[in-house]
Length: 157
Image (cartoon, rainbow, N blue to C red; front, side, top):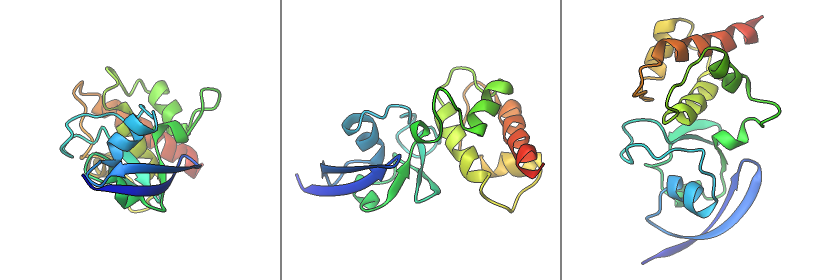
């Protein structure tokens, strides 16, 4: 088994860990750093439940090797808001009732946060298309779109 010494910043905190070179970023976050907000859904990159940001871009952490995060900034759902001050997307998900079972919520939220940083969209159809990699078993899609658009409207006001 090949090991790699990894230096990564997660949610603003520097970490130095020794990992198997085959370890996924998802497993590093959940098992080594005890950040369990990022969900393990399909473990094949098909559902988006494991979406996190690496250097500000959304990635599927189940398909990203931990070693690929060397020297980079990783942000998980735990790093975007606090219990006392939710991120606007987290608040919008609550306000719009944009989740049911919660299995996809962290990935949906992280994808929405990244989407709101992009400028090349404006419609409900755009949101549906640009978040199509995040699946919801419960079918909360209309309310997820409502939540994203409500944050966008607040940003533009």
